[in-house]
Length: 243
Ligand code: NAP
Image (cartoon, rainbow, N blue to C red; front, side, top):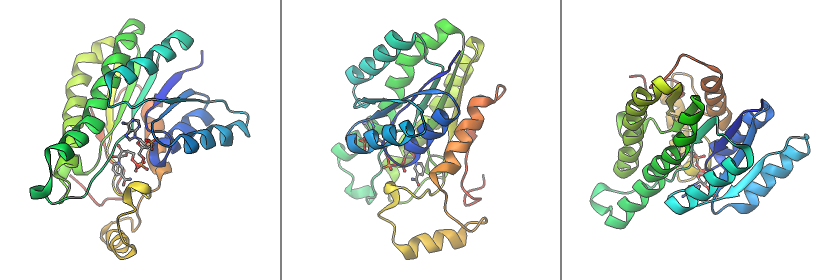
């Protein structure tokens, strides 16, 4: 029976590549997007040329009511959710002393509440199936902290702790919960970095390069296929961060 996966934030960057990889591997993908409708349509059309059909679904997953809509849609149509990839996220570069209440709320809402809502609404159905795989995309900054990104680091660190706790709670229901914590990956999120800054990062990285979205998609794919890994933080980062 075909596996059903929801990938959040699949219109761009890492999420787009994860959605593509899973779909190419025969999984039915529901690719969530919010603002970037054209990019989501392009992804669907690109895959259609290869006779692969994905669904795209607009939802602002920082809102519980939107999350309920996407889950309801998938359950009504497919009856189950095998895989949830909580990838959608935002970042912001700001001095800690300049961060406003609004910045803080926005970060926690988009990165952490979204993961909480999506996971809670999905898990109800996974428990019923006694099977499931949840992959949360956090960041190296959630592990070691990023200067000028305290609110981002806090949101990602919370996702790491959330994952470990949930893995313990859901293991007996045969649901695996893991984190993929990327290093610096070449996406729009890093547009703010200058060529010089990127070069510096490459020079400081043991593998001598920054990552590509496909590096993260491969890791997600491995976690889906694996059957004995849960509660873990796997960090494809070229060796830039070794804990
Ligand atoms: P990106 O290119 O900026 O893409 C972000 C994606 O998240 C977009 O598809 C966006 O959708 C979606 N999104 C944001 N808020 C959303 C919301 N409320 N509802 C639905 N979708 C939402 O970023 P990326 O680099 O691919 O990052 C993907 C994930 O990897 C993030 O969680 C990020 O924190 C993490 N990460 C990235 C890096 C990196 O170096 N790039 C490193 C570590 C971790 P729309 O545009 O359609 O709104």
